Image (cartoon, rainbow, N blue to C red; front, side, top):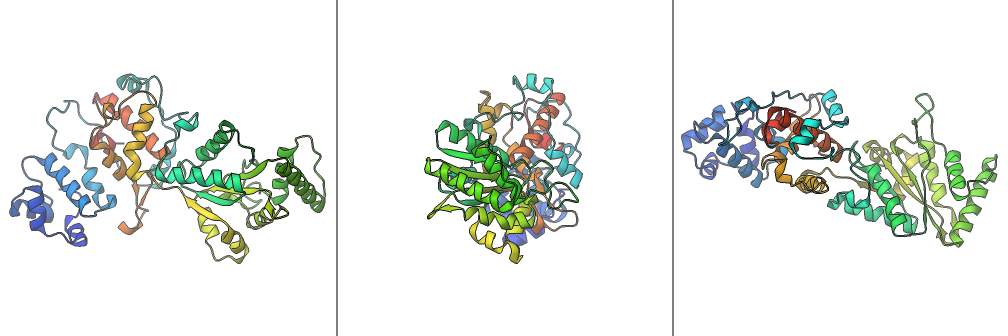
Length: 400
């Protein structure tokens, strides 16, 4: 059996069985058995499966629809010519929230895997040490440009992305570029350790804390005034003096989805600090999708903030997956083809389609983000090395 209902997919895409039969070079009877009964032809199963995936993709099928085709149970796959005799890693597909959380956990590359693939160390751990290490997808390039523009012109931006999407890396990349390009921009990053939306769950970041962080960054020796009025007047004057000396200022708040609503609302007040008509500070919020939802809500308390804030969302890698992995391996002078088989990238994309429990196909979303990809590929490389397979292919990905 195919483990996928082909009839609804063909109906959704407007594909006739006769067209599919011609595309796959199958007889009408063989095509009917495949579509209706899930019976693969007796010969060239791998070729037909690959052709089916390619044809459906060319007709607009999404990876969620193709998932079971790209990730077949490994023990049901016909062996490819020249495949190693070792058994493929055992399949353990598990679409629970715990499984998704596991994909976010740091995955070590075993010594056996590093030796197997001729790597001196794990290419996915501590892998970003300079701006050159940052993979620049179209989405990342736009975020990098938007952050620098925000820093240079005192803008207001929110960078939104799932866990592992690379938000913190891009904030750090901004600081590195500012230093490397000798730009006169002071980046101010309040500590957000244990920050929560209310004091019952953790510590809230209040506007007074932000004012203290700004004052400390401008003058570490300054004694911050105790009263709110005096403190904000002090910060305003310090920013004016710094701006007149030629410096720009950017406030970067990470985990911003945890900001209390009152603080989120009061960010507008910091943006309104000016010297004549010149803004004195820009604001960059960095957070998970809940931040986007809060800014887009109908809550009148954040409406003024929302109207002034550009929200930019980091997209999953998806179409950029192969280029991302080539970039990672190239940093270690390792060719992509030495690690991953031609069918591996589609298998990774399919493996990283998440459908919430009880959800429908329309609820599927990609979690093909750098951290998740790193961990999945590291697990697959470990499995391939343990099984004695020369490359990571779709069967190995299916078992991870």
